[in-house]
Image 1 (cartoon, chains in turn brown, orange):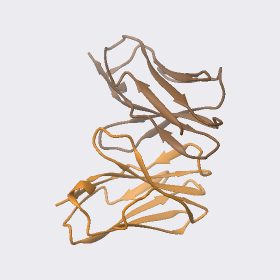
Image 2: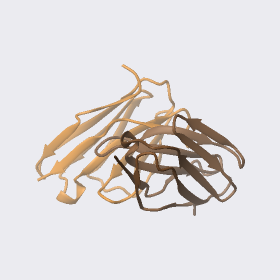
Image 3: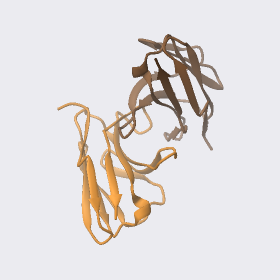
Length: 109
Length: 112
């Protein structure tokens, strides 16, 4: 059975304090790993797709990386508007999306 | 309009009511999904449609009934719900079943 574990569950950073979120996964035949951002009461917003180990994607202050067992979402010099829950999702040969429980990020001034 | 649109955004219904949630996608995708999100729980997949055929039904109670009349529209018909069904219901679409999904803003459902 595919599994996704995200850590930490919650993270509080000061503005400008860089950090990383972790997503550990087990999946049969990885077809893709996705990162989403979700604001309270809203639908998840798609950020990145990673397909194979060694791949990296960047968007503004966010950078996602992938190994054979985990993915990291690096946040460089975060701002308060980066506060949200970040979700990691994997899909494998079963074409089923498996979601992690997310990391709640709070960035304070 | 672009993306995935859900209506209504908020819904309060009694346990004896019948209501429907609507989802429309303007992305030309072939797969559509219904998810339930309860507080402090991961998203729970309810139904998947691929090319207008239901391909997955995750042991969802019969009081939830999906309908996919075409590849752009998805409905979730609700009847005789329970208070524990109160949650955020999310619709999503993807190019193919199992590829990256794009979500609507959700319907916040409260059953009283």
